[in-house]
Amino acid sequence: MIKIGVIGCGFIGSQICAAVDSGVVAAELAGIFDFSAEKVESVLQTLQNSSPQKTMPEEMAKSCDLIIECASQEAVLKYAPMILEHGKDMMVLSAGAFQNPDFYAKIQKTAADHNCKVYLPSGAIAGTDGLKSAAIAGIKSVTVTTRKPISGLAGSPYLAEKKINLADITTPTLLFEGKATDAVVAFPKNVNVCATISLCGLGFEKTVVKVIADPTISDNIHELEVFGDFGHMKMTIENKPSPINPKTSYLAALSAISTLKRITDPIQIGV
Image (cartoon, rainbow, N blue to C red; front, side, top):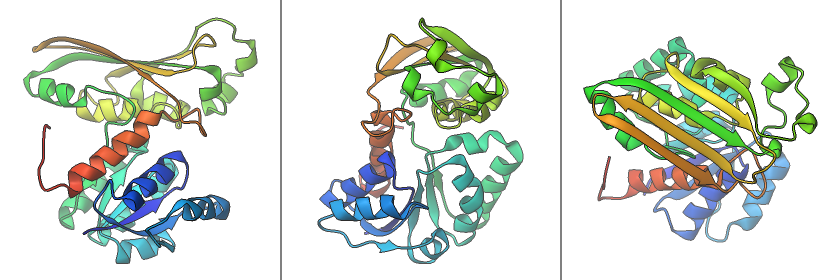
């Protein structure tokens, strides 16, 4: 049974801890960390079968087999190299951190040199398996359109930069259209799905992202459209937002748990 460490005790982190604690995932919850002591204590109070240590990521890298990041892009940049240098596997939820090609190359090399793996769940979108398959034959274009309620976009750096007041938006409004490279910086808490799609397909520079603020909806909606030698693929996912964090889709937490189950299960199904 592998030992799990969790960095970040927000909605996704708490759901992962609950899944391990309840036995949905066959693993041991060995350590948890968050800069907010209150969030750590909140998670600890929900656990019935696990007694993880409140510890720093540096200690997790010594005592755990797999460390799961579900905190921020900054956490990936700060802790991922160190964790991999200890020869430990890592799951990354904030895939936007990999928009920097030098950092991505560094992580690839570090993981290879230390014989460990980096897992990126599909997150709040579907179609990554088909996209990876299509990429083998050749892809011509990939577009991701993210449509979110106003509350799900609050606090994004792009809004401050462009002096956009969400309270003034009364109809569906296109806020951003451009490369995934720029999108993951402009909306670091909102479009990690675009980072995952970029890594599966054409890369950050060639993946087109559209972000729409829509005051008429309550769900987070992601649309993926791909053209390539295989044909044409288009799918839409309507996600319920997390009840405690409207920036995060519930499916993102479920995707992380599913990936963890795939890592720990003896039988592997699908891509």
